[in-house]
Image (cartoon, rainbow, N blue to C red):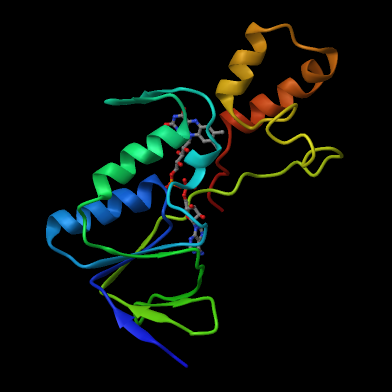
Length: 174
Ligand SMILES: Cc1cc2nc3c(=O)[nH]c(=O)nc-3n(C[C@H](O)[C@H](O)[C@H](O)COP(=O)(O)OP(=O)(O)OC[C@H]3O[C@@H](n4cnc5c(N)ncnc54)[C@H](O)[C@@H]3O)c2cc1C
């Protein structure tokens, strides 16, 4: 069965950017639907275990605490949330967004906000996925803390490559 629904603004991605967009819609008096494929809002913040001290005006012990602060801000907002369901197709011409699933839910709106975050580039080297977040990191802050601590010979070896990834994550336009 095909289910068609509409909102002024369709927001794809429930990380900090999508959550902020939903708050803005609320403030502007626009109806919105926030679509997030993960089982909860917050995006990459669910992978932040360090204290967050570089977010202007806010501090949190980790990403989870930051998400709960965001949640509190969203509590009184009246947007529709579709959590745990992926936006599988977007038609910019008609403003339609199709959601994955047997219901074939389709949302149409006047504007679509793409807030789907980033996907990290991978090096494609042995052990990369097994050691992700541990010996391998693509975060500058992790590299900073490594440099303060005693680096093992193996982490020394990967450090210059990792710094390249941290400092130059954006490819020039073709
Ligand atoms: C380990 C780590 C530490 C960090 N530490 C800090 C820090 O100290 N300070 C700081 O300011 N920032 C930090 N960041 C960065 C911060 O988390 C990101 O800048 C922020 O989460 C980006 O928000 P976003 O909403 O743009 O994207 P994301 O957080 O990536 O959210 C995008 C969302 O879109 C969803 N999505 C994608 N495609 C679809 C689809 N087709 N349908 C439905 N949903 C979809 C994803 O599931 C995801 O939830 C850190 C990030 C990481 C990974």
